[in-house]
Length: 116
Image 1 (cartoon, rainbow, N blue to C red):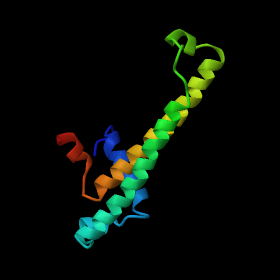
Image 2: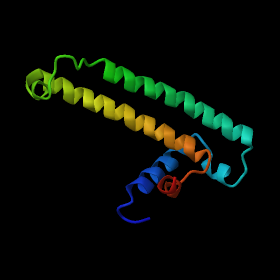
Image 3: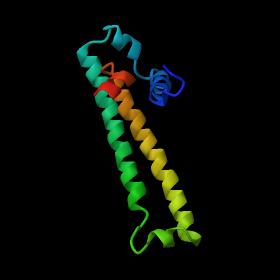
């Protein structure tokens, strides 16, 4: 992995963290049945759906109507935009992590992303 390979770094860190609730190494070694692997993936997908809903809530809770690019950047509207951006970022990151975890159940790697 090169120093600038951020996707590999993110995936490695998330896999290590996710291994606290999904036995990825055992899955990779074939020590987990297909049914168990699918159960882990399905549980992660349910959590993923919840995170996608949280993105929708973060976007929906902020009205974009009547706000041109200029008006967003002034006063309280800009503060609302910055707060919403933080909320959306947090939920998008959570969603991405769950997507990665589902992929780990099937042995996906950063190289798989690069070649897909």
